[in-house]
Length: 193
Image (tube, rainbow, N blue to C red; front, side):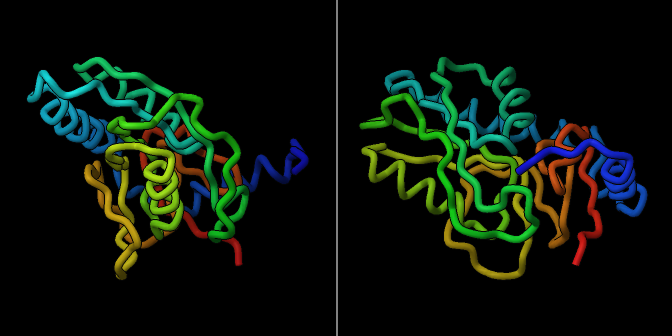
């Protein structure tokens, strides 16, 4: 995909928010990150004999969530990342593509997967299955947001920061057409047909 910096694209990016609806403000977002951190701290600080987990961020959407959540975790951990996508620059899910496989050995380990959103659940279900196939003893899913799509998903997150309405959202790592991952808030936007 070729990047084209033009006035048209800049206007398109700005219009996404101009026509959007604020769903959660920055305080609600930070409160959600605090809740997930508190839950993970409780789990991994209770048992001193438990091995330290491997934490894997799903790039690129989870980069903001990972960066802020990691600074709130109060237990030793190893961090790595993977890049798995069903979207690319589109707003509809497609074929799952592994761009980067974790370099760390997952065999016999508790692996905590951090992602920005549990939407339809296909990507995280695939990630969990693949990590278990690679020998992980346990895969724990922690997501910043779980979208209420009104149907059963193939996987459920163990830890959730916020529940979102069934709308196309941007902010806090989630993007539309490559824009607005950098927002501190969550906005619902109108997508192109």
